[in-house]
Image (cartoon, rainbow, N blue to C red; front, side, top):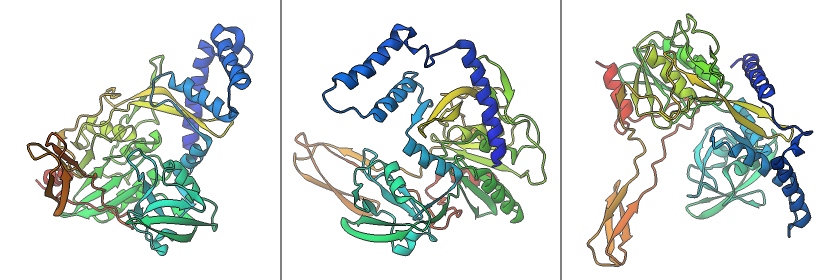
Length: 439
């Protein structure tokens, strides 16, 4: 993505927000105590410091006030990020940092802890023998078994060439490795060629300043391979940069608006101008895959391509995030993301809290969770059945009822970044797309 272009968009929208603020007014340092509510806020802060039994963490207190102010809007997309979280967020956005070359997921049901979800072949973790499923126990001398995922990420990352000692648990047995932090590039695009010479590109996130560039390279590669048609997979892509969404849609459109923004005064303008006709565009047959987790920029792309008849949308009803945020870096290093406009498809559709309805509706079958219940057995009896070829034993309760809920099957990931792994047998949406393109 062109960084200058992103800055221009941010400045233009911020200026609009500033004008609206000047018109409506608001609190300043000078007039905060001019209202009863403002005076109450200041008094509560002072009374806490004067009367509270325990020491007050001033930074935590004020950041809590910021979080509360934004939270009072009851808008899940307007929020405050702590400085340490924003630092990680900024690295993710840049698409580059120094780490050990792994992907993480939470290890515990409450979302805490960290577990290895993928190990990249070229990273320090791969060289050290770290494997998928290994659980973080300690990072240097700090226990992280119940730490927030972002804290684990922050501790693992660092300056290039520095080292980190990590204790993992594998099948309950701990082991410790020392790894040197190396450059890691976030590759948001995965691709392969399916049977029938059908091209497949999965875009995992738009929250990467290099997403547009990586996607353009993948499209160029598909054209070079002369694929007969193309599948764009936006499932589980929660969105990101609006610029990136517009750029991706423009790879398939030659004219007309892609997405428009409408502010609170109901003024509407086309974002980034109309689509352009370029030699690098892909003009062949196209199907876009979506599911309930496809949101924001994913819906910008699927909505634009659906409205213009450029692609067939296959899958599940999408999430329905039809608003855009302005991110503001704060003096403490934190970030406030503030919803300032809603976006519309080329035909003027509002999709917020509605989503995009696919042209062909198919349930996502990739990550089904085994869920069995039964009754009528002797209380306390052991019941054994087979799940995916493995025996599972549960105990009936005092009423003779039993149940079993298995873990969600983890998606298959290649250890080579940029390489897609697919399974037509277990993936009903992808299978349907291939069938449609093979007719």
